[in-house]
Length: 227
Image (tube, rainbow, N blue to C red; front, side, top):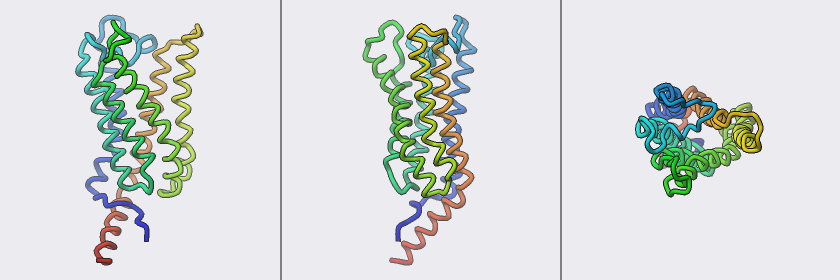
């Protein structure tokens, strides 16, 4: 008989699911906090998030750590736990890659003086790759939630979050075409959708933690009885 979930203890479920929500809280707290500390006219509507961690920026190392690296690792840990309970690995693996790419964007800071430098290119790959892998993961995770966990509504809504990526791309395209929009807000809308999806999914999984842990315990018991 096919297992419902892989073994995951109740104590693990207590912590790991909340990591998905904590990542977003830490990112936005860092974004708002470090931007408020700037005295050089940094404005959310006109400046990119990455400029807070750019080479030479005030508190750049701290922002990259708290705004990109730690949130990215939290999301990768969250995805690893999801992989342990999922019937398929593709969605969780893409989700893990998204978290690691976000962390990489902090490891390789933006160089505002040289957009062709290896650092800037690596940062761009990490930043854009995190969103792309997340959007791809949603295609697998929607059906997974609906079929395995019975979350029909959230399963249908999950692929819709790709709209945040498209909205960000469209916003940036409008800015570059001369439309009267501020580029920074488009980027922040994309991050809002990204972390909001993780937060809602994390809360749903946390609320189901007893069921998930219980199913894992039952699976272990079944293995013991079979032995």
